[in-house]
Length: 59
Image (cartoon, rainbow, N blue to C red; front, side):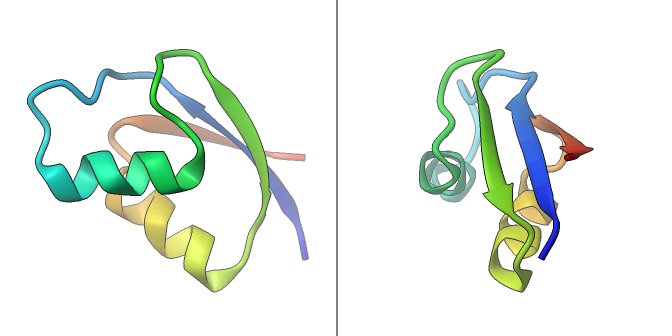
């Protein structure tokens, strides 16, 4: 599987609770925090839900 770097670029303040929980599940929560994850269907689905809050870069 391919690895991706997911970086939070926007705040989760005033976002729906579901989006906040998704960001927490990805290991994010503060702006400019970056995590590296394997691109599984589950991770791709979570990223798709919060794509307006993060940037994705393939490693």
